[in-house]
Image 1 (tube, one colour):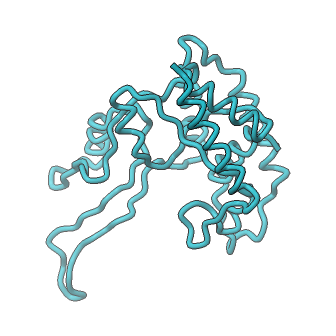
Image 2: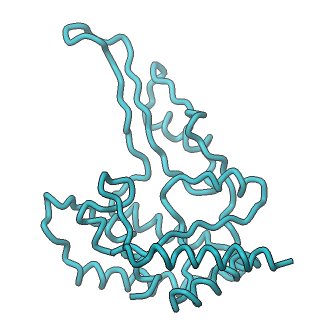
Image 3: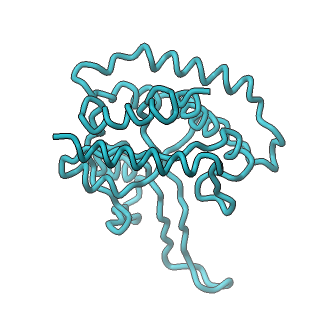
Amino acid sequence: MTFARLTLFALLVLLNPAAPRQSPRPDWSKIEEETMRHFQAILRLDTSNPPGNEGVVVEYLKSVLDREGIETNSPNIIKGGYQVNVIPSEAEATLDVRALPDENLENLLAEIRKVINDPAVTVSKNERNTRPAARPSRIDSEAFRVLEAAVKHHYDTVTLPTMSAGATDMAYLRAKGVECYGVGPMTDSEDGPKGFGAHSDQERILEESLHKFVRFHWDIVVNLAKTQ
């Protein structure tokens, strides 16, 4: 299986969010069929003018999420009241919002206020866990070419750029104009549905991938140091 298909599998597992206890085993044949359909659609999108213009891919993926009814925010902290027999005077909810890299958060806040439509409710940005907006890193840079060469050398496959749904401190560097790229070791495509995915209490990677990943990083650092 190529890196490209592994990446899209991660997306489609998200589009079919069945916990292991609810569904003993996903229908991988259907997931693979849908994976390839989306992969082919993305390959037909023109991201070459200007180089690094991945906005059309982002919009395509957003349309898929919207169609499936999957929101990109989650109310993870809800607080209100202090006693079982006392009506709370106020309540507070903190939403984890996974915005697009260049999304205007002020416009998003205005849209949330419009939907709530209640002057008694205050909507504000939590500065503590906020990352700055920045454009996606280019895929025609010297650094990206070094990454491509390392992927080809160590894994004998092509490099397919994707946008992670997780937060990263690279956002601060991107906001300053630095091209940044995240990489990760090989994982088993079935680990997520089994409960071994990222941030789980049993998060794991393939043991065979560890030493190769170290060599992969070593070559990237050495070859980046050689570039002008």
